[in-house]
Length: 135
Image 1 (cartoon, rainbow, N blue to C red):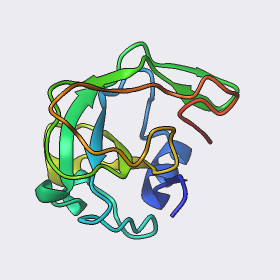
Image 2: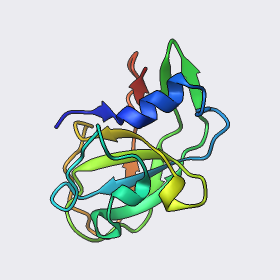
Image 3: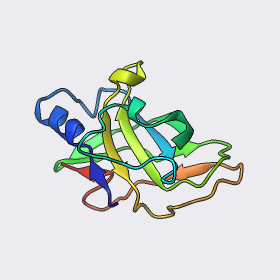
Image 4: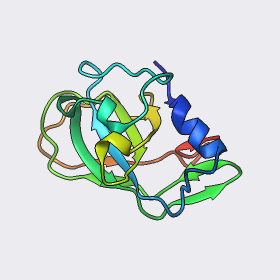
């Protein structure tokens, strides 16, 4: 799979239901052996089993937008252990998993896959034109 935006998340952006700057946006590190992305049908974080979520969630800070690209400060996951991590999942947290919409699935980021060793994992977002993702 390649990096993708979830279809229903993309629809929410188009309908003005997301605000990258003011919504609580969170990130999980996930196992690609325990989770198979389906960007067309997966809608909420509850569509990803808790056993596939290796680390997180971490709340994104210092969020910004420019030229249709979403950006944020780098995300630090502390003392990560567990199975191999093959992807990053970004979602908008509503406080309830069954209503917290999925936004993006990233599996081609530098450093992926990674096997945790109990130390911190820092996700350093791309500083190129597309940043984390671009609409």
